[in-house]
Length: 476
Ligand SMILES: NC(=O)c1ccc[n+]([C@@H]2O[C@H](COP(=O)([O-])OP(=O)(O)OC[C@H]3O[C@@H](n4cnc5c(N)ncnc54)[C@H](O)[C@@H]3O)[C@@H](O)[C@H]2O)c1
Image 1: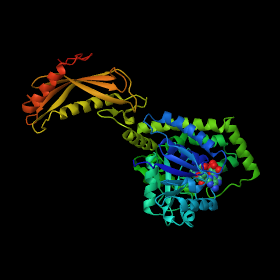
Image 2: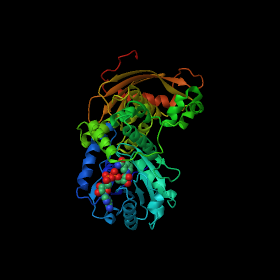
Image 3: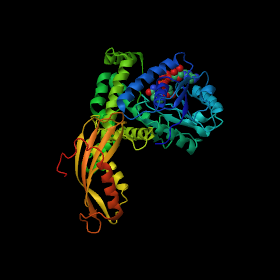
Image 4: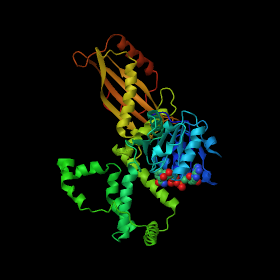
């Protein structure tokens, strides 16, 4: 994951601009906001509140200190000193062109200009810019702070460098970049969504289904699959062992009937509008937008976590982001923090990871003995683990190792895992290791300098108190 930008400018702070603000701020990026609406900052603060709540549930990885939100009175003021400008003003070509031209005139030369447009072509947006090569579309999805997808599309004059810089910035704040290969109205995702939407409108208009029933058709079925397997992989499975070829042969002819009315548009006359509004009201059953947003966020967090456990789709993006957060978290000598990837579906550190932590400590000790692998090395033959306190992602821990006993062949170790700020052990491991001769592959005495180092350690550690819990198993 690349380094995140230090500051970005947001032009427009509505549904999408607010979501961008939340994603950037929670990733430690300073945000300079320009939106002529009077209560723009208050609206963004509301989105940020939702996003904080969602991130608290989403991840145990240590988030960086939040960036600062600055309200700016003009485009020129907003773009001062930023690395990226994200325009999320209403979907109006002339308005966007004007805003982007103002940003182009005032932003540092190396800043990239990105538009959140759902369907306008970047070539059209860059037409009047002095530096058209730095303009591109970065099309996100609502809520921007939780959905990782951003479609990136360059126009005829966009440079490869600008695309790469914008993509790096998006990845740094936990997003999945989908580069659109050819400039096209509506890009990839909105074309697919529009097809669904068009058909949904027909179904309601013709009284085949209500708004709620159309939604049920998605959420109880295909919608569950969509989060980890899109249309193509799903249909491959539907084709059985013979895969896609068979699927196309079997269901191809149906496309010519056709089932759908995709090329027609239902007229949004008064009757249809009233019907859609009434059914939508009924479906919402009195829930406010704020309540619906929270329901949505809670479900999304749950899905993202399930996908992380499955290593699928957006769960992989989440894991990569969490690993980067952990890597960047401040660390102190000899101490480590528990990576998010160690966390089970139930929020606890998976038990195999305790062995990993202790095995690393054993490796560190063996590394200090100066063993020559061509001559011989120690093999662990027995480990006794005790789990004493829970560990969470991001907890800082260190392992202290004591040599309990050593003779010519055996090395008897006791590890204590201490969680930052707690004097009592979080876990312990008692291990017996045997020295194996590399040539014969058999247990054999250790000699020379290594033997001297082992004995020196043993004698030094003999002065320490014997750890509580040592000698529980047949290690003596
Ligand atoms: N809503 C979505 O699901 C969605 C998804 C992806 C992309 N988009 C795109 O994002 C953009 C914004 O959509 P939205 O849904 O956030 O709309 P919105 O109406 O919620 O927000 C637009 C904001 O722009 C502000 N604005 C108006 N004139 C401005 C100006 N001259 N300079 C700066 N700000 C100005 C408004 O005050 C408002 O806060 C559109 O291009 C839209 O196509 C929307």
